[in-house]
Image 1 (tube, one colour):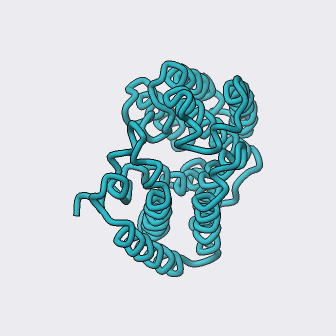
Image 2 (spheres, one colour):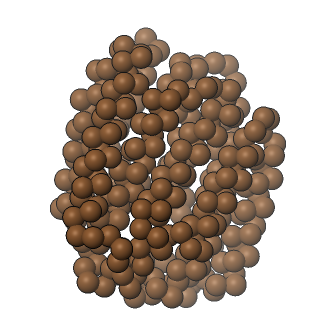
Image 3 (cartoon, one colour):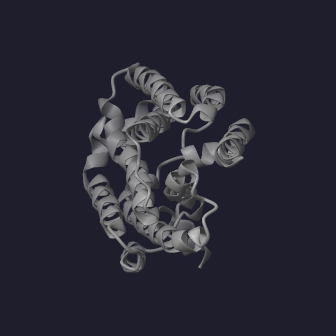
Length: 279
């Protein structure tokens, strides 16, 4: 049972809190019944994302066995057989889709889009440089619009751009860290890493990080009190870059949970945003 729970990667469910960004930033979090309204969308995305993780781990098991960190994953280590993992993935998929159908409106379409991109990514797209970054980033954007659909909130253009560039920035950091950690054997573990020329990921990270600051600043100027959260955003971006370059790991969830300065920055940002919007 523990192996199956580990296979579902529950710590990655933190990403699904993106569903609550639209009501949180629009000032709707205190509306009666909002949390009950958001329960089904959250459960649906948790199940769907776990199904995608299990499927991806099953396909990657042969390569993961020789990976310094991923070798301990349930399928790669032999704790869960590929057949059992495949069945588990299908059960999670069926449950996630079923729950999404209970949510009014077009929410189901965003869950379906997430699953479609995840499927294509696991089968082929993760091998293509740059395309793999956009696939990972699309997961965050789909969650954002899924939250907008579930809570009936319109997503502004600047918020879309901020989340998109932030997602590509984090994805680039993850790939840069993998390339640095694995060294010459990087291509053996992840084919797309072979296609990134030396210095490209550093440049892409700097470019997208700057784009995050510009687009988030424009978004905050439309909601004047939020402009005071821009320095926190700047600190968070720089801290993440420093962590990646120091070899501390580029996974966004792990970075947020295991890096105390990043965690405190994220928490402070949420508190300050809440104060600016709900005071």
